[in-house]
Image (cartoon, rainbow, N blue to C red; front, side):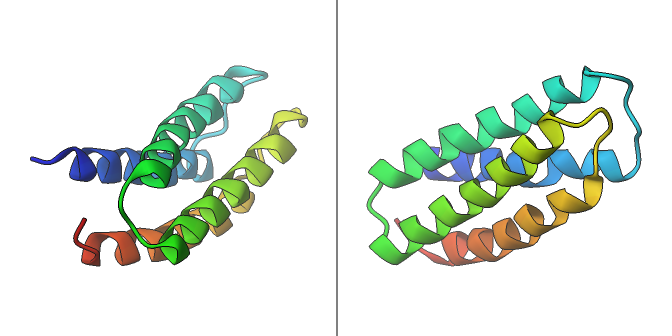
Length: 106
């Protein structure tokens, strides 16, 4: 298994994990830890993909995905309860970017 596929798996974790808030309503400030897990996984993925040998357009897509995840995370970070619907945009953007990356051969 190549390191590229490991980071794609991290990307999947960063995309899918925030969707847990659609089915689970955490208590006060517990959700911040879970948002952090997704952002750490996606941050590691972005750093790896920026230094990998993929096209510049794919790198821009990856950065856009990370920006949407950070925007949804920062909005929810300041709230008392989580608005899980905001994590759907980074999820769908991430699915598109993931499909582009999985068809790309590094």
